[in-house]
Length: 129
Image (cartoon, rainbow, N blue to C red; front, side, top):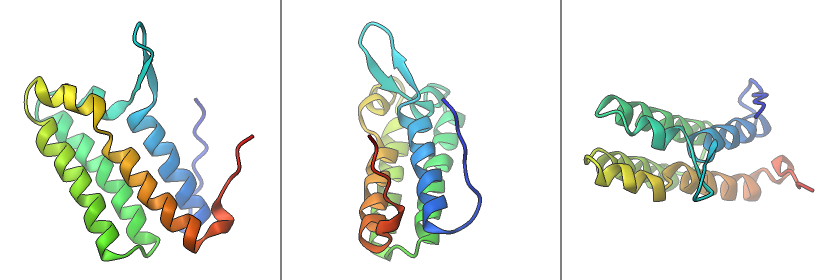
């Protein structure tokens, strides 16, 4: 997987960064046998306390990028709530690790960012073939 992350605060650069980060956090590897994708968020979540803090910090980076796009306070609050819920439930031993496997707060937040970008910055959209 190649990451070519552009610098800058323009909507195109931000879109490319948040999409790449979401891919790393939620869909970086495929679990053999069950053919399910997992990412860094689920893996670091296995480390008690520190892993949850790292996962939350990376999730909040997406919120920070959304703020740079000028997204509404309501959208930012929803995104922060997604990260907070994921962090709180993910901190529960064993059950939280299973929860991280199915609740993908970063994917939910990327969906919110994409909706904003598609509406306010449609030129950032990339049609994949």
